[in-house]
Image (cartoon, rainbow over all chains, first blue to last red; front, top):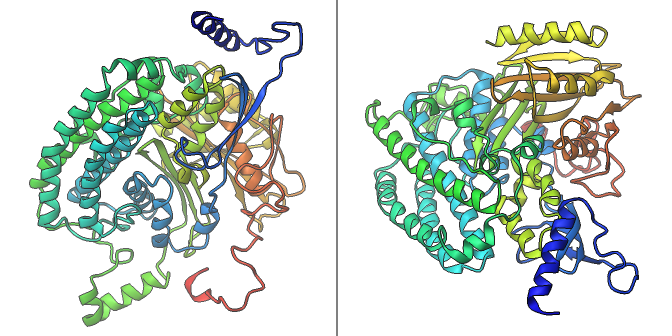
Length: 423
Length: 168
């Protein structure tokens, strides 16, 4: 069989599988029943960037059927959260989508603030916006550069990772940690941005756009990259909505749902930015939507810095002594501060009864916290709406009829993070 | 807007599902409707198809467990979203521990597939009509449903870890 012929028969098979005729090569050749190969992809496979198992039924290189198994790093977060005081749940949220943990932290703080009814000063809200947008950039940088790696382009990944390092240096200056940040507190932030943090941020904003431009030059109109990603793992807007997609994956399919715009939190309504949209929902569109979102994030951070300059200096938390830990010097020297410190740490603070749902636009979609409080020291029930748990179930449908290597690419472009998937 | 929405949905539900409607109330910014469990799939389908409401996005669903409410120990919560109009509602059902079957909404929302599997895994709620109801996050040979309140976080027989003071 010539190469051209093999190629033709492959494309025909793909068409047949897509049209639902999966008994494609039944009796092909000598009238014998076709045998399929079962390929176990994962749980620990170097190309899946995390612990995912997919059992694939293959006809040559084409996937006929797929079944996903998840739960390999399930840590029972929802059960754990029922046994911890509110402030101790923040580190749990770090470990959901660990590529953008500050967004998860902020989302959790805002959920509790909604429950107890705290008014957060504008300056703190803008500072939170800066942190969340930095986290979004670091999340998208990882996802997009990994798409590059999976298409065989290692260079962009190595260059742009320096920029993620710079973001982590800013986190380190803000909270002392890099990956699992535990950044911010209920009622505000644990400390003000230091002059060094402002410097790092300014320097990052100066250096990031050229670096991102360089990264885009490597991939965006690259013939090989485009051939590889256009039309790879597509999903229609209708199916995406039915699968409750959110975040860049939904927007790549052409639906303009962004929590920041539709249900603004932390003063996002005051910012001027665009929601980038794709049309076909394939890997290239997902890549492009994330790429564009990073530019928008840079714009948002610049606006937030301007807004902070107009706010009174030195405010970094709301005045809620019942929930916000007093500074250590005061705890040692001041009776009132000691009492508050003791009450917060021992979980004796009065938490109102109630039921709230708060959603933030996480790195990969709508991250929601559904919290029921019965007035006790721990939540009565806490449910996480984890975006990638919800949209990863469409993976088997999206790769049906695709090549094995396209399945790898589809998975990395969906930004599925094992920590969030398995919670 | 929320006030209009709650009466709008309430009237529609009362007109079409008079027997199944229990109560309506605003909780935080969410209009919340308690309905009877047997009609949940029909109501979700009705809200999906209704011209005016079009709740065509399933935000999330979650199981609930209140062991002290006799006869209504278990519950389910569904959050639906109409994206074009930004309407958001929450539906709740409560049912007894003796009858844990709930109609599945997977025929309306494909997204409910894994979400319902997760709640089955956590609470043991049986979703009738689910295409593939088996555990998802925990091991298949686990013999209990860990999110029920009666299951303690740590081994209850251990005496060396006394954390009562810290709320565990």
